[in-house]
Image (cartoon, rainbow, N blue to C red):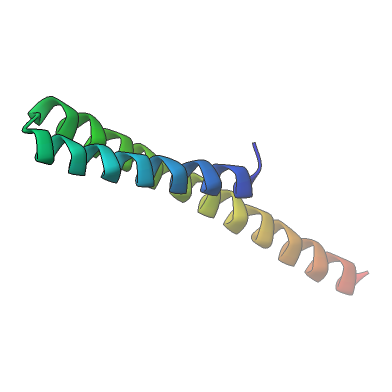
Length: 71
């Protein structure tokens, strides 16, 4: 999956997780609050994965630019 796809999925999971936590608190369900927190963390990790992919791509592009200049 692309870095953008990872980031989009991450944002969605964060939002759904936060909503589940809010609903869980409203209805008094500790289980739903916990599931929402876990889903929010999953979203954070997906966004971080997208950021890492972007960083690797940018580093590779910079290295290629430097290599091309030396030719």
